[in-house]
Image (cartoon, rainbow, N blue to C red; front, side):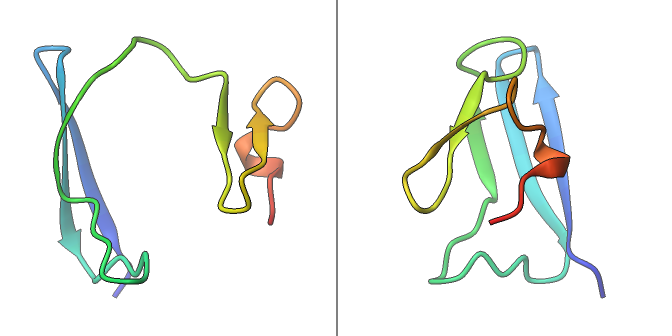
Length: 67
């Protein structure tokens, strides 16, 4: 079965993530389920990959990024 996450935004303040199907193998016992405060509106300008490199969306779209 394919892993599925339900991601909901409540009152534009709280993000809820819940695993619907599968185990979502992040590794090392990490799960995404929980409540998270929304820190800012809009898309972030970048993310930091697991190697510590800052990847800017203006230079590389998520669809083009492969580690």
